[in-house]
Amino acid sequence: MTPNTVLEHDGVAQSVTEWALDYGITPAIIVGRLERGMSVAEAIVRPMLAIKGQRLPIFSRLQQDFDPKSNKVLLSHKGKRRTVREWAQIVGIDTFTLKSRLAVGWSIERALTSPVRKMKAASAKGHPGVPSDFAPIEGTGAGSTAQETPNITFSGKVENA
Image 1 (cartoon, helix red, strand yellow):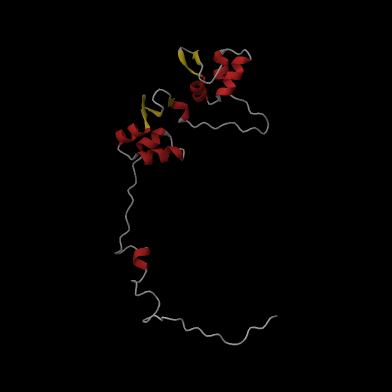
Image 2: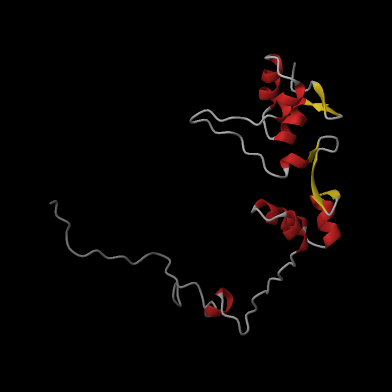
């Protein structure tokens, strides 16, 4: 048995890897459970148990709604499933904005329905900032004339301590 082996559970047939993504467990655990004689339903549905000191993989809400046929993450909202890009176009926000909102933990509802804040560009007139705080550039800082050869003098002798 491999992660590509197709299993049927609850009227749905998909690979071990796809079941693992759906239930937030690793494909290796499902394969191991089946090889030890567990039923398909129990091998897929039973959550992983952490052994003391073991860190379990973290699966995001988005990974659990992954469409293996299109190889895309789908978001469900009001009974409809769409890709992030499709939802961004439908609600009229930038795809990056939607992805950012979801990455910081916003619910799909909030990410899709919150208005986008418009960023105001600071202008040089009336708004303090780097462009308006500094005086205009005047020369290179080398003075009014440049020396062809440096005029360096040393005073006194350096004694060894």
